[in-house]
Image (cartoon, rainbow, N blue to C red; front, side):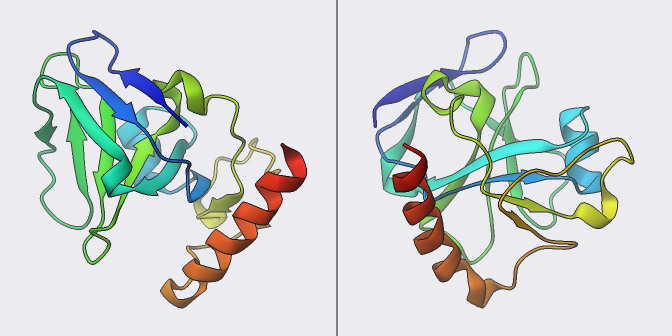
Length: 149
């Protein structure tokens, strides 16, 4: 896969040259507030397959937990890096044309979802999957992608 993405104002452009390892929809309160939406759509990708092309994203004001990066001009949430997961980056899927056709494979934090949201992903979690489940989820996602491609 090769696709580019950009923030709302277009000042930050990004490139993705790797297939997603996993796609997910997060319903946690934090994502609802960060995205000003009912959920966030994320593609977990290998860090070596992602780069920022133009401009410099800034780290969000919230300095605990995941590192969320934004455009300093339009404030679009671009991507996140999780502590202990330096080999992957979590991209906001709707910023990349090439990712818009990828449905979420898992939904997380259903315990915090808005009441009118109807979950539809193949795997669903009231909270988040355990870290030791991630390798199997990535394998299952690849198999699912092969069947649905």
